Amino acid sequence: MPHTHSSEQLRLIRAAVAAFAGETKFPVAFGGYERDGIINVSAFTGTNGSSLHGLRVANNRGLGGRAMSEHRARFTSDYLASTHFSHDYDKEIGGEGIVMLIAVPVVVEGDTRAMLYGGTRGEAPPDESFMRAAAGVTEDLAHEIRRADAPLELPAGGSATQLPGPALQQLRRSHAEVRRIAAETTDPVARERLAELENRLLGIEHPERARATVRLTARELDVLSHAALGATNAQIGLALGIAGSTVKSYLKTAMGKLQTSTRHAAVAAARQQGLIV
Image (cartoon, rainbow, N blue to C red; front, side):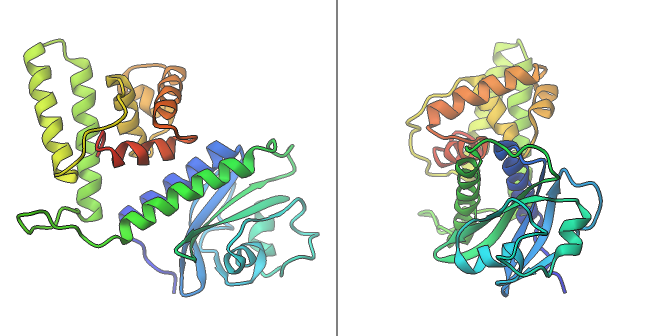
């Protein structure tokens, strides 16, 4: 039976698949977590049908199975014609008309914990930078998995500081909403009270957060707080009342300040510094 993932795990893999597609420029992307030697594909973008839904890839079977067992990315320019892996999943991959396919394992402490795939249907392949972009996204997901694996840390008072997935997701939504309202208000008193509320929200997730070493503008933090929820540039622009191109510009400058190459990595870095929830 396929493994059931928590809502937070599903959010993470869906965000990673979306980031993988966006950063590598592959028109089709999908992925899932490993459990008992099986990759359970549960997130998709750019698919035309449901042939990949419920796909379960066994260790050393198919392109992804080889990537899983070898702990390194595997790539083929012609999936159906390749003789370098077994063809157990031709029906599922062929159902999407995929020609070029890459499988990139997410390796944590020497174990493959998830797999991200990108594919084309015969279009011109992405430029040569896609492997670097793929590596960046998979490392971001590996960081999130390590973070989820970490034991609960106890402050001096002795109570756990890490929230369960649903509560943490609600906290992040609340933080993004507070920032959106603060950006819209022209009342200085209300803005100050909202800033105090934001600090209290940040304190729930980061009770002993160190002083940030990077200074981001209010708008850069607004954009990152919404990106942390997996929102697209268009969705962020709609929420904040700005153009998608402006969102992209804010993300680019924030990524530069945080010394990251992807939006996913920028979100992770901002969280590490206690800048966003």
